[in-house]
Length: 273
Image 1 (cartoon, rainbow, N blue to C red):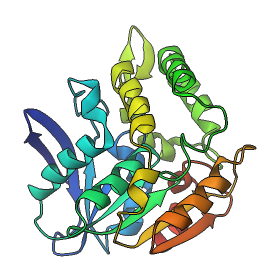
Image 2: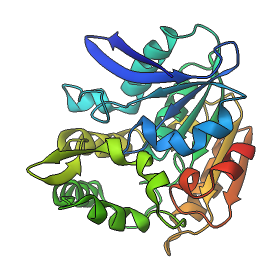
Image 3: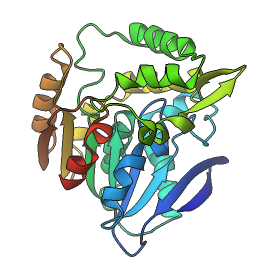
């Protein structure tokens, strides 16, 4: 593993590289409240085929928050991520994003068609928030603020108990690295490293620059891998229909027995696809 710190516009991004840099580069972007280690269970299946570039998104992991809410707009984030990547490789690259990270990938593909060779969406970039019935921006902001501020755990066992519901696997210590670095200890409790300001700025960005605004401009192939165990609402089904209309070269696959963190539930199948 080769760790890096790369400054862009006075802001330092933290990340790491894995694998042989003579292979095609795959940039991996995590979801909200996570960090680059959320891909740790998937890396071993990809490292023989790709030069992996994993980045802690702003306000997450070791990368500090951006100063202004508008800096979290997807077009702005995509530009900054591209500048980070260009300091590692000037060759075309692939991108893979989970949840929030998937939306960043789509906007990067829209903005840099000559550099992004292909995009892999891991249960993101197609449904939230446009197709979630009744989810207004105001409601989403309230819900996410409450979620982050109330996520205070008195022990690591409490954290594990919560996250067991996020995966179809039986949790064990081998899964701890997926989430351990997303938390910090404050007054003998575990809380998210991700800060409320960043989370709320991201939510605002979802409403101002929804994923659908990128669809028609994407020239590279897109692979959407989505959870097969879906919530009761119809957001994913509608989202799949809409992305099929907008993206020219698209393949959609549901990964059996997976929830939103499908790369935790079945990393081997995700890597095969």
